[in-house]
Amino acid sequence: MQSPCPSDRRLLFGSVVLLCLAAGTGRTAPCLAPAQPPEAPALPDLTQIKADLTELRSLEFKKEVPAEKQSIEDFEKYLQAELDKMFPPGKADDVQAALMRLGMLLKPIDLGHEFKNALLSQAGAYYDPASGKFFYLMTNVSEMILQTIASHELVHALQDQHFQLGPMMEKFEKEYLEGTRNDDRLLALRFLVEGEATYVQTLWQMKSMMGMDLAANPAMEKMSLKAMADMDFATIIQMSRGMAGEFAAAGDADDIVRAIEGMGDIPPYIMQPLLAAYLKGAYFVMSLRQEGGWDSVAKVYNSLPASTEQTLHPEKYLVQRDDPTPLSLPDLPYLEQEGWRLVDSAVHGEFYLELLLRNHGASAQAARRASVGWDGDIYRAWRHEDGRVLIALATTWDTEKDAREFFEAYRSIVPRKFGIDKPGGDEPGAPADRAEYQWGAAGLESGLTLLRGREVFIVEGAAPAMVKRIVDDAAAVKIEHVQ
Image 1: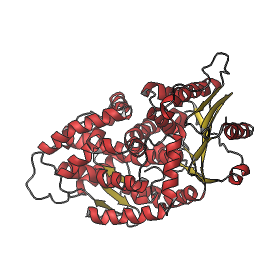
Image 2: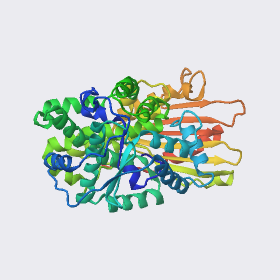
Image 3: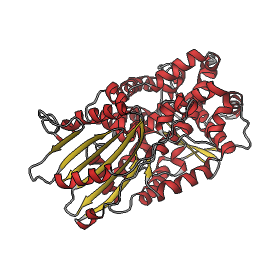
Image 4: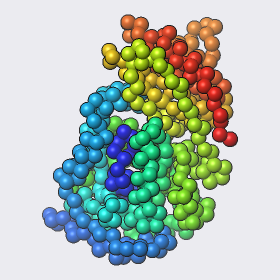
C-alpha cells in the first residue's frame, strides 16, 4: 500500500478481491462457478497449482508453502497494531491536513481508519515472508476463486524464495521511515511485486481455466494487459459493481459482494494506487518478460525501478533508463521562527501528480499528458500554531515543454481546488510564467505557482509575502539534472 500506510511486508504481498479483472479479458467468467453449498469449501490442494506455476514462471519451489485460514478479527488486530506504530497521537491528523492542503485528499478523513477499512474490505489473502506461509482471509467463496487467490500468493512465495523479499523490504522500509518518505519509489516497488504476481496469476487463469496460452501470442498478450492497465478508475468501479450480481449468482459470500460494492467509497488516494500496483504492474512485468524472458524479470530485483515513471512507461526502464533527478528544498529557519513546524515530507512521482490533477477536475487525458515527462519532485508541509497548513512542491521535468504542460494543467485546477473564480495570472499583461491566487477573507492564505525553465514551484497556505519568499528561496536552489 502507499504511504502513510503501514509498510510491513504482510501488507505488501496480498491479493485483492478484484482478481477476476486480471484475466485480461474484462470478463468475469474464469472466476465464476456453480452455486456453492451453504458450508464454505475446503482449502484447495496446492499441488497442481504449484506445478503449473513452476512451468509458467520457470522457477522451482525451494520449500513447502503452508496455507492457513485467518479470521478477519485476527487480521484486524494485526492491522491495528501496525497502524498504532505508524500513526502516533497527532501524526495522522497532521499528515491528513497536509495532504488536504496539497490536494491529494478531497475531504478530512481518519487516515488510519480508512487504510484499515480498505485492507479489511479488499484483501482476499496475504503472504508473510517471516513465516513463509500465506493466509486466506476470504474462504466462503467458490473453489475457483480460492484457487485464483492461491495462484497469486504462491507467486509471492516464489519471489520470496528466489529474490529474498523479506530482507529486501526490511532494507527498503528502514530507508523509507528514516528519510523523506518516497511514496513514488514504494509504489514502483509494489508495481513490480504485485504486478508479477498478477501477471503470472493471469497466465495461470487463462491456461488452467480457459485452456488459452496467452503468453504464446505476444500481440494478444500485450493488447490484453495494456487494456487492463489503461482502465480508468471510474470504469473499474463501474465494472466491479456490475460483477457483484454475478458473484452473488455464483453462490459467493456476501463479504466479497460488499467489498466490490464498497470500492467506490474508499478515497482515491488509497484505492487508486492499490489497484494500479496490480493492473498497471502486470503490464510492466509483461513488458520485461517480452523483452528478455524471465531472466529480464529476475534482474529487476537486483536493480529495482526508481520511480513510477519507469513502471508506467516500461521503455524508460528497459530501453533508456530514465532515473529521477533528486530535488531538495532549502532550510527555511524563518518558518519556525514564525510559528510553523514541519509535519510532512515526501516524493510523490508521476502517478500521484496525475492523481492530484484528476482530483480537482482535470480530465484523464489532460492529467496524463501533464504528468508525463516528470523527472523529479519534493514536497514539504508545515503547520502553524493557529492550525493553518502550508505546502511547498518543487518539480522538475524532462523538457521545458513538459514543465509548461504541468504548469498550465495545475493552474487550470486552482479555481476548483480553492473555490475561487480564477487563478491569478489572468489579468492583461500578467506574466505567463506565474499564477498568484488568494482565498479566504483574512489575507493569510494565498498561493503562487511559478514556471522556471524545466521546473515548476508551488507554494500555498500562507500570506502572500511569505509565499513569495519561499518560492524565491526554492527557485534559487541549484539543480543537477540526471541525464
